[in-house]
Image (cartoon, rainbow, N blue to C red):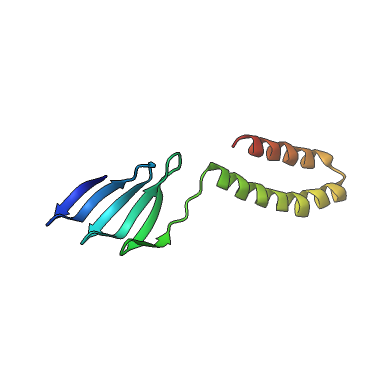
Length: 112
């Protein structure tokens, strides 16, 4: 179902196209084709910004969700722990620094 602007019985202008399964396309139609900046929303997912050209997605804007950031931060953290905390703990004989890093890591993993 299309809800938006029409011109001579074709989609032309801003509009929203909703499919039976729940997928929603939002954007600008030019002579019945999506063109320019728009978004796609799938059921149960966040909208994704895309750029359309003649109904074809030519670019998808990168978006990070909660878990994406957790994985990114965790990866950086693990790199720092294994390349920083373990050698630093071994050199300084200070295991409390490594324990604090481990608690922080568990907290980040459990928060998502």
